[in-house]
Image (cartoon, rainbow over all chains, first blue to last red; front, side, top):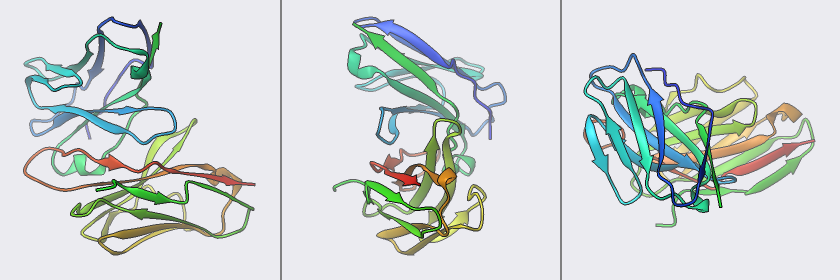
Length: 111
Length: 116
């Protein structure tokens, strides 16, 4: 499994755009990049997944550079309810079945 | 679908007692995962099943832990005997396979286990 590195924590204010970067230097050719969000006292929730370039959905955008050694989760105009832990997962069809979570990034959104 | 359903939501038991956690995955999902989450160790994968068959139980901490999936709609995680260090939130998750990559997994609300 490709090892991922994320900041332990980040602070932001309501209305700002938040970018959380994940490093995965040894990502393999078949690996996908997936992000999950976890609120206190809840299980993780899928946010977005991508392989290369840019992916956007109603919740977030995921930017993946050409070398794919990192990825950036972008949350536009965050609100207090976006306070959560965000996990970056990297894996291919076989390894990603195991859904191994790292330490994640604890995002705190302030008023 | 009601999502992944776990029971009980909270469990308090005495050290040495047997504890059974239950999970009902989303209908049609062919993968089921059991996780344990603590402040110290984060979210740990204990075991996962594919089509009711255990595929990888390398995360199960020791022989006191066992998991079964007798059919596609039910799984149990049993701890016997329980110890205070087993206190944690236990999550069950399910997903289905399609194509390449990694489809989204759906998590239950978790069972908060306290062993005193």
